[in-house]
Length: 187
Image (cartoon, rainbow, N blue to C red; front, side):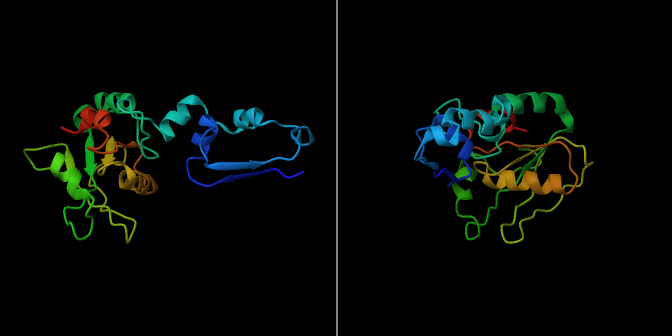
């Protein structure tokens, strides 16, 4: 009897849900000898639907998957409404093309915050070398949305802020996630 489940990517649960993905392998010589069928395993390993959508939200507009940790448009809308004027948007993009060349594309869609443009936002650059960013000078319970161009560094920034005691932090993705961006991008 050989049974092996190997996660090849961080989208292991996604692979189980859609079963056509090659993100995992199962080698099984006799399903009766292991006593558990793949359907039973997926029921055990799958998170709740709410947890799944929070970890791997899918884009409502094109069916592509968001990066891990990007909040759904519905979560962002509720978060922004509840936060109101207390909201802080942390833009972690780097305008230096020699450091983060990928940011140039999203900066063309929406520029960095200024006093008159996106007044509730601050540009606190996430540094990949130190895995950190400057801490915002706000109370630890301030509602914060982090973002980069599409959500990767926004998620790292969210985790960094939470590790440093900030309690209300969501990753909003960035201009690439148009349905999310429309909920907070003008703040």
